[in-house]
Length: 191
Image (cartoon, rainbow, N blue to C red; front, side):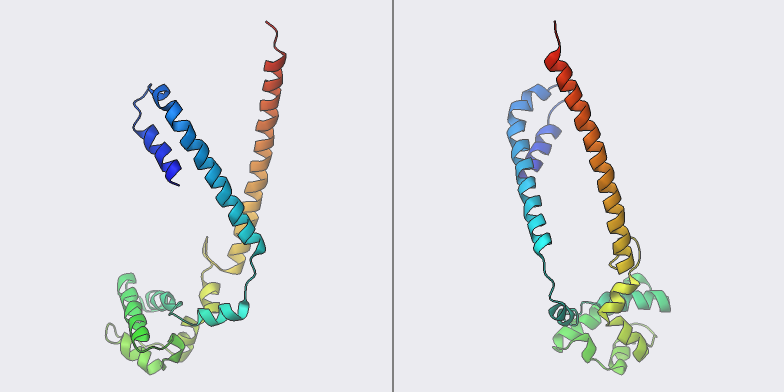
C-alpha cells in the first residue's frame, strides 16, 4: 500500500513534461506495489476458497453485542417517521443501556424497551416488532437494496460480477492477441 501511495505522490509532484526525471525513481515503487498486491490477492484467494463457516457459532454471535441494533433505528424511522438522527440516538442509548446492564437485546422485556424509547419520543413497539428487530434473519432479509446482504441481492450481485469478469477476460484476450500480432510484426519487420 505504501509503495502505491509513494508512486502516486511522486507522479502528483511531477511537473507536466518532466516525467523522465521521475521515471527511474518511480518504477521500483510500482513494481513492488504490484508485487505486493499480487501477494495479497493470492492470500485472499486462499482464505476465501478454504473458508468454512460454523453456522451454530455464527448464530450465537449474531445474538450478542447488539449486532442488530441499527434495525431499531431503521424501524423507528421507517414506521414511526422519527428522524434518522433521533432514531439512531435512541438505538445508541438502548445499546449503551444493554451493555451497561450486561444483557443482550433478547433479554429485555418490551415494556423496558418502550420505556427507554419514551425518554426520547412518543412511540411504542409491539412484542412482534421487537422480535423482528432483534432477529438476525430478519435483519438480513429486509436489507434487499443494491449491495445489501439479502440472499437474492447477493445472488444478483454474484451473477453481475461473473458477467463482468467474463467480459473483462474476453477484452484481455483481445488485447493480448493484438499485442502478440504487433510483436510479431515488429520482430519480422525488415528495414
